[in-house]
Length: 386
Ligand SMILES: *Cc1c(COP(=O)(O)O)cnc(C)c1O
Image (cartoon, rainbow, N blue to C red; front, side, top):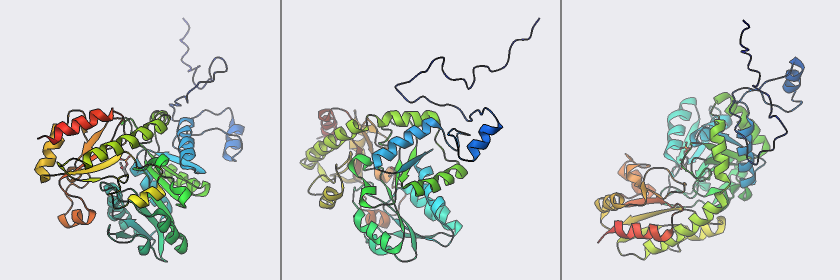
């Protein structure tokens, strides 16, 4: 009796005929096959395209990267396993012991923990700039990298990007902005002179709350250097998640336009309600940075924060009464989500630090989704109660 054929004869073979899929295939493979030693020699010499190993490069991942580069108007982009992987890849890739890193205190909590809890241990001189201080003025001749966010969480305060860029250029520092809240459609930091843009692609880029991913976009030189850092640090995105990310981005234009519109409508309605103490939305003339936002953003975004009358208990009651709006951390998806900053992003933060950040315990942060805005208003109206 003859032995069954156990050779994996179909692996690595192309489709039966020339196939041209309308979508990017998921190259769910860790490694890539080579024809010969000569083919590997050519690959190593940088001649002949091809792929070696998915921690280095993968076609599905590259397709997502090309879309992000196009959206940010960047030479190149790279995607990572999470927003924090993008942040750590960028900072570890760019900084050495003894370098000064200036970080705005009004950034994502994980970023603060990374720079103060880990990078500082490796000799990076971290300077956290208080929210009330002028970030541009804190940049000096020994500053190597500057990290900031605009708009910020949860008060949606804006940083004058052009001013920060000017100070960075004057001192030869690399500027990096976390552009997650704004999205590349509402804010184009590279056009304003920023060196590197970071995203938690988990949020608006993917837009469907079904993956965790990150991204960096910038000049070819910078991205090549950081791509090397990502290869070594290992925070690569799985091809399946890269597919979901690239698919989500196909509808980002429609999603963000609708979210901008609904957030403005909801913000206006909330501002006119006597049960509401304050509404923070950069699109409202009452917002302290309305003018700056109008100057440096093309849209005001889908994030807004509302402080209700009656303090923490009242805020909890409204939070608990939502029927349509979901109670969850995270943002940027198609479903409207509400989080209470004092119970999530700012949980356990000291009262003085909360005050400096302008965060109060009566605040509800809303990530506006794609529901009919009238349904969102009705949910708020019911939740605010009598
Ligand atoms: C969520 C978030 C991050 C972290 O991204 P992950 O994808 O959760 O790792 C960083 N910055 C901002 C502004 C975020 O909202």
